[in-house]
Amino acid sequence: MKETVQVTLAIGYGGLELIALEFHEWLLRNGFPARIIVAAGTPLEKKLLERGYRGTTVSVGRSFLRYRSAAMEMKALDRGGAAFLIHRHQDLKSLLFYKPSGKVTVLNHTFYGVRKKDPFHRFIFSRADLWIVLTPAQRENLLDTSPVDPGKVAIIPNGVDLARFSPRESFSLPAPDAGPLQIGIVARLDPQKGQDLAIRALAMLKKDLPRPVTLHFIGANTPGETPMRPVLDRLARELGVEDSVVYDGFFDDLSKRLRELAVVWMPSWKETFGRCIPEAMASGVPVVASNAGGVPDIIDDGTTGLLFTTKDAADLAEKTRRLLSDPALYERLGRAALEKARREYDIEAIWRRLAAAVESGKAS
Image 1 (cartoon, rainbow, N blue to C red):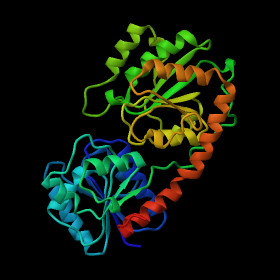
Image 2 (image 1 turned 60 degrees about the vertical axis):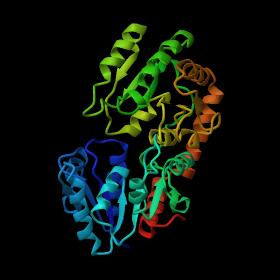
Image 3 (image 1 turned 45 degrees about the vertical axis):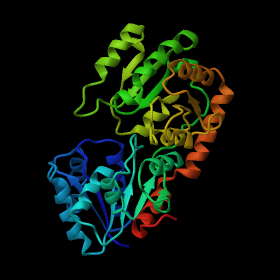
Image 4 (image 1 turned 180 degrees about the vertical axis):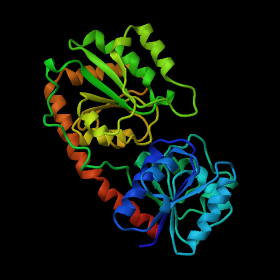
């Protein structure tokens, strides 16, 4: 197999960088040659070095010149017949300085909010051999807003490590003597993630649900941006639910934490995929998520989870009340979600599909 060279020059750290890290680990663990080009001093570089990947990590400066530096590194690696995987369309700027002879694939992690069919984007997007999106909805968005050839687009979703995320012993609602029902949101604290809407829904839910409930934020403030927690704290106090809001931060063992939750909420305004959804599904935990972005391609409403009207706190509260008041529905959703996670989101199968697509540079 050709060497796979990933390129991701983002300064921050989120789901995109985590996927790049995990794919790099998978390639090396399975004996495939791999390198990853990153910006120096970033959280991703730090994690790669901490895990012992110094010999396969290629670091470039953090300034605008990092695109040119990355291009020079790509040129050096291209001599060995490598295949390249770029994780952000911003990093396609590297191709202005050098176009590899090997295949170039772009893994597109986000929806585009503006059209990119101007001459510059037509040129730079044409330098990629293959575009990978996560859901059918994202494919439609890419084709509508960009000059990408439909024949150069493949759909490969994010996956879940089924060896790590396994179901709890029972699909039943937690027993009344187990304490408050825990609702969790797994995401960085960010305005677009809908955490403020979740607090409003919590206040409504507490009025109607006979059992006590707590809302857990499993994540932290977005690095380099205005902290979101003070905003959430103020809103919780105003609505009188501050004692029911808990900030758990990040968990190294997220799988264990998910199994402790009664429900996972995904209240984002526009989530491209939301990897915590298949992780919750694999844990047998029902999900109530916003009917936006690529989420409806993952959750079959009423079958493997529940969808609520985007930005509608009252609907989120009502769908959750219905779920937590109907033991039969709760168990049915949990079992069906687990079955779908095992059938469609097994990370081992998905990594192999991704590796094959990157090497061939063709949609199959």
